[in-house]
Image (cartoon, rainbow, N blue to C red; front, side, top):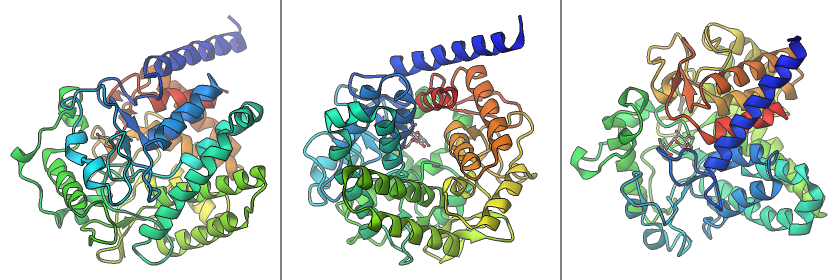
Length: 439
Ligand code: 9WN
């Protein structure tokens, strides 16, 4: 076999495998991250999934985002889970019984239906919607996709600006470790020590029915997640009524807000409305991201703990995700590229980027966001390398991504020291983003 032919055959096999995952995980209106572990619709998963789905079916990619937006609250927030009413409540914890959005969130503007969670996830949605639109602008215009999505996505960003600027510097704060999407990252350890965990008997985890305990957060972590979510629920999910026990400015979350704000500007231009406010906000957010979270000595961004107003002394992949922001100062970009290649993040076995410092005191090669390499962060960093002109590095990461995605049967994450698959398999965003990198 000559090499180009075998490479093309491998790409075709990978593409078919990725499509199969997305077809199997499609429920008729949206895509579950995993049939076993995550049987509902998740917010940032759907954004990543739509980015890949657009290569299979633009129509389906639009519906993915539209069904997420059907769960949006009147205050603008896009909840981190939109629940499927057909799934029994004991299959995933916390279920609608716990969040009680339609009752406890009524004042804050939760819809009567569907049931949702009350917290949020990283705002990648406007970028996803813009990429879906660009995949077939004619079909998008015919269905009025952009015209319907744009005001909702603008309201989502308004919520983050009006209710989540808890630090007063313009950046959005996360108020629960599930919100940055990197649940048990060592970045949250110190802040979580201040949170009294809920009693172990007060809740029943469902994740361990499908996931291995060594791959998942601990019971103590869950006790604290439950406590924080319960406090928020009891305050009616009202950010003005509660002094949040956990409040962080997360670099990854804010980086995605910036790229999405730029996507809103592009949408506004396409729709013939004023794009200048979006561009001005993206510029200002970029300045604040650097001013408040950049650590020049370490060569990466840090999370800021708003309870102590200090930067968290941990190196996490969330501090590299801002590479995806186009308007970063040149020296920041160069330092980020150096850090990616250095001893803290240069994974020996995978060419992917570990979720946490390989040399860090809390590094754990198996446990979720405490070391394993994830495909969504690799995709974001790949986009960043590409944006800033590091084409050779971007291509190396792309090849690594595709090799690991196929070799792991589209795993949720992999051990960065051995390449072994971890978490669930047949995982939607791994498949979706593989499709995107193949297109
Ligand atoms: C809690 C769905 C989600 C991802 C998150 C990931 C994990 C949930 C959980 O799964 O979190 O939201 O039950 O562990 O950490 O990033 O969106 O794939």
